[in-house]
Amino acid sequence: MEEKIEIPVLDSLDFNVESKTVNDTVSLKSGSFRIPAIANPTTGYEWSIADFDGMDTTVVKFAYKHIEKQANNEGVVMFGAPTNSFYEFNVQSVGSASIKFVYKRIWKSKEAPIAEAVYNIAITE
Image (tube, rainbow, N blue to C red):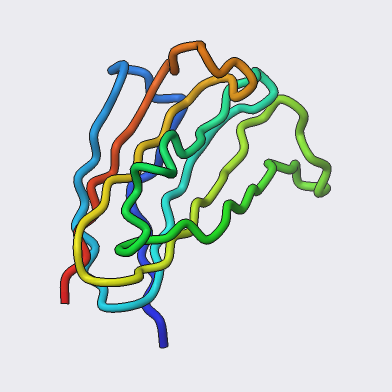
C-alpha cells in the first residue's frame, strides 16, 4: 500500500511575507505526496508550478492537480469564494528536488508573482 502524506498548505490569504520557503523532508521509498493550495481564482490569481524544467523528475514527478470549489450547505458553488487545490506528486527515486510555486495571474507571463514558495523535498529510504 502506498503511503500518502500532506505538506503544509500554500495559502494565498497569508501575505505577511512576500515569499516563503518551506523545507520538508519526505521520508518515502515509494508512494506520493500532495501539496495543498488555497487561492481565489475569481481575482485572476492562482498558484502554479513555476519551473517544470528545473524540477528533478527522476526524484519526484508531478501527477495531477485537483480543484475543490467551495459550496454552501445546499451544495451550490459560491462564486468568489477561495478554492482548494491539491498538487499530487509521485516519488520516483531517492534524492532531492525543489518545487517552486508562484501566485500570479497566469495569463500575464511577464508580471512578477505576488507570492512564491519553494518546497525542498528530500526522498530518503
